[in-house]
Length: 417
Ligand code: UD1
Image (cartoon, rainbow, N blue to C red; front, side):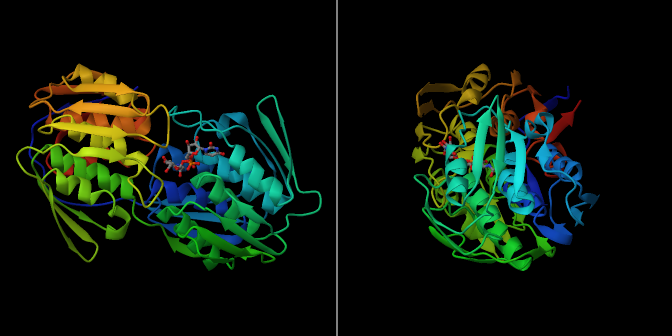
C-alpha cells in the first residue's frame, strides 16, 4: 500500500497543465462501445478509474492501446454482453456501460457498480429512464438483467433530480434508439456536453447538452472519431486549493474558465487573486486565507460537491468561520475527522460542516477513505507544519494523475513510498 509523505509549508511556484477530466473519460470510454471502428481520445488521464474502464472494454471485445495521454479504442463488434462483478465494482462510473451495451447489443447483464463510499448512490433514476426507452430490467441478487425485446424507442423523460450518471445513460441508450428522446431536467455538467460532443462527432444527433432539456434524434449507427477531452475542473479546483493554503502563486494551463465559474468567487472571497488569459489561470494567494462564510454544493452550475473536500481543507486554516452545506451526497465529510488529527477544528452534523479556521495545521498520520477526501488531506499536508503521512493513496489515484509529480514540479516536498 503506497503512502504519500508530505513535508508541509513549502511555497509553490511555476506552471502546470491540468489533466483531462476523469468524469468525461469514463462515459466517453463507455460510449466507445457504440462507435464502430476506431476512436482516438486525446488527453485521457491515466488513472485507476480509467484503466478499469479500459479493462471493461477489453472484456467486451474491444482492443485498446495507450500512448501517454492518447487512448485508442478499436471496436470491430462486441463479443460479449455481460460485465463481471469484479470489473463493475472497481468504479462507480462503470454504471454507464449499462446504457451503452444495452443500446449496442440489445441486452446486458451486469452487477451494481462500486466506487467511493460517499453516500448510498442508488441507480433508480437510471433504471426508470431506461425503462421509459423500452428496456425490460430484472434486478436479482445484486445483478441487473436488461433487455430491449422490441428495441429501444425514443421517449419523453423527466428526471426528478439532474443526476449526472442517469443523464449519461440516457444519452448513451437513446442516441441509436428509434425516434426522438427529450430529456428534461438533465444534468448540465460540462462532462455531459463533452460526452454529447464525442457522440455527435461519431454521428449522433444530440442537441441541448449542457442545458436542462436535451433532444436526441436516434440514428442507425455510430462510427469512431478523434476527440480531445475537456480539462478536469475538479483537479483545477484542487490545485487552486493547494496554492491557496501555501500562500503561493502558480499558473494553471489548459483551463476552461467558465467551468470554474462557481469555484473562483469562493476563493476570491478568501483573498485569492486570479488573472485569466486564454486557457491559462494565474492563481495568487495571500499569506493567510480569510474564511469563506457559507458554501452550498449544488448541481452544475452550482458549487461542485467534488470540490467541497479540498475547499474544506483550505477553510480549516483560514481566518474565521466557514460553513459548508453538502447537498448532493450524504456521507461526504469523512476527511473531517482525519483533518482533526492535524489540528483542524471542524464540526459536522448531517449535511453541515462548521469550520473554525486555525492558524496552523500539524503533520500527522492520516488515512483517506475516498477520492476527494484524499485530495483534501493532501491539501492540508501541504500547509501543515512537519510531515504528513497520507495513507489510502489508491483513492487519490482514482482521479489525480501522478499527483505527487505535479505537486513536486511546483516545488512541494511530496514523496510516494
Ligand atoms: C457524478 C460524478 C461524481 C460527482 C457527481 C455529482 C462521475 C463518474 N461521477 O456521480 O464525481 O460527485 O456526479 O456531481 O461522473 N441519485 C439517486 N438516484 C440515481 C442517481 C443519483 O438518488 O439513480 C442521487 C445520488 O445518490 C446523489 C445525487 O443523486 O445524491 C447525485 O448523483 P449523480 O449526479 O447521479 O452522481 P454520479 O453520476 O454518481
